[in-house]
Amino acid sequence: MTLFYIVLATFAGGLLSVLVAASLTVSVLTHLVKSLVSLSAGILLGTSLLHVLPEAFESHTASPQALFAVLLGGLMFFWLLEKVELYRHMHHHEGDGHHHHHDFDAEQAGRGGLSVLVGDSIHNFCDGIIIAAAFLADERLGWATALAIVAHEIPQEVGDFIVLINAGLSRRKALLFNAISGLAAVLGGVVGYYVVGGFAELMPYLLVVAASSFVYISVADLLPQLQRRLPWRETAAQVLWLAVGLGVAYTVSHLLHEPH
Image (cartoon, rainbow, N blue to C red; front, side, top):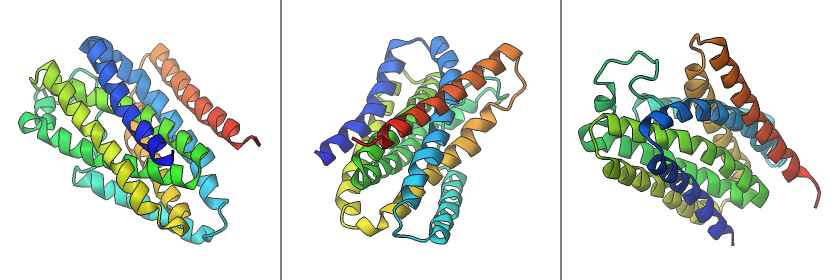
């Protein structure tokens, strides 16, 4: 059943993002992504700091010094991956207020959208491994981790869909690219299940790596997008969605830690 849960959880993010992108217009998606970015930041930060990291430190099979070293190494690793454009978090699009030049989306999409497909596939593959490690450590932790990743996956994939559309791809082709990159998460989950499962003693370290991924995405990508000066109503909406995300993460963590 664990493998089934992993496949289900890794498939959910890609499926939901494709369904959202297919059912709404680009203008509606543009406004939706703004709210989803704030919500995603709250869920990722809350899940990593209130659930995943405490779970790793409560294992008592690794010293706090070693786990903090892995956390630091994880942050630097994901920074380097993004530096070479292999760990992309695309929430940007023309007209989003980030003051990109006119051909920004076309450059981001690359030839036929290949760079978006490759970058997101690597990102999603890593997410799949993270979900598998969490399920192998504890089923409840697996669902909490999957929730955090799905919450981030939807605005990420929708953002990519907008970039591809603005770059001149057809709606059908953009949806196909999104679906293909989403399947990389399923592949990562299956690989993680068979590879990680034989190294139970590494679980605390893998959980810290997962947490470092969540923290890095939140601090390096999502929160900076919320730093622009906006009218007070938009700022209030950002704060509200961020608080909702933190509340969801706290509630899930609290419910999962309740004794059965």
